[in-house]
Image (cartoon, rainbow, N blue to C red; front, side):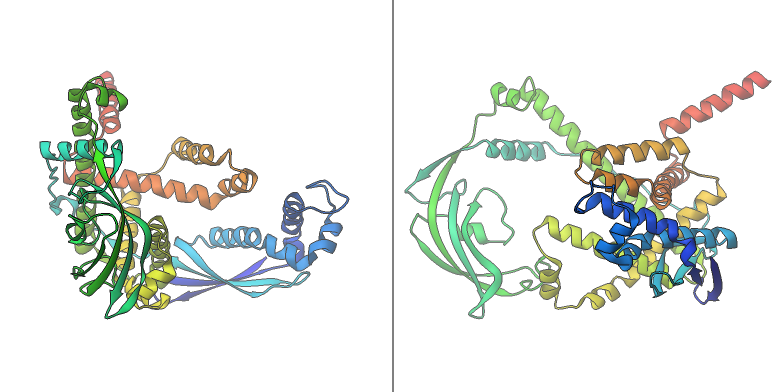
Length: 450
């Protein structure tokens, strides 16, 4: 294997790597074995087909494509270690030559750790404020829990603000149907807030069989960008009205939820909600600390590849969040009237900020020798393995978890958590239980020495 390293602007290097056929021969054999394990090859049990048979069935190019990630991973890691490069983030790899029996050539562009001059932590001032949960919030939660167990009885009379309606709905903007604004057998709970402000109020007093038409103006900050600030016309057909009888708030209700009494149920809800507020306050403090550190620290040029990596992470986070709400990325892009590259460009400022936060965390860890212990990494890996061990594709996942980069990612995550804990100890004076134990043990050792 040979390689050439070229320094670029913006704290980046370009590594051109050439891997000869005999150097990736073992990767080809391993890849053929994987293909054999997952494919039905006539005359052979899974995983037992010889290499030449797999070649005949899938072609050498197919095997090389299967082996590619392994070849890239090993050769890239070798070059980085030999050159003692202080890299950060995932490399951007472009394969330039790839053909069976020939040299495999690729170019990896990777960010080098830029120099960071950390802010004086002692001058970072952040205050932790935990909101106190009010009793009325617990009452609202109890009402919601009772609502989940409500008995629903069809009625002929007018709907009250406690009833449920089943409707067909059509939405129009300037007489044109709104995309995604048609619903059949849509259930509306009039006692709960609707995502369209003012919608429920228009349905109070309606009866089964009624046809309603009305107009509502969506708030300018509404999450559906194609509707925000617009006047939308509604056509609603009321199909059914149900009276909802909520169960009594008594000991029997509390026992159904695993508590001995209403008092214990309220105490549990209060405890859980207060814990949520504590968590929110913790998250707010962490964000404010990092924001202050970013503002008061100084940085060399942030590598473009590092910013692009953060953009990609943000993009995937957005996609997952949209999918949770039943919205496709394509629909979202149509709603905001932007293309994918335009959306990524919008991420630049936040991605740069996230990249700086990662650099600060790494620099603090380096200065204060904060690391992830091997036992902590293994414990975290075990949790992940346990989550997937019963999955049908466990064999494939298991191989993924054994990769060095997965271990490195977990180590970085643990290290970042420790850095945040250290920052809190400096800024807020908070000392975690395990830190107290360490100090206590150290104190006893000093006493014994004396």
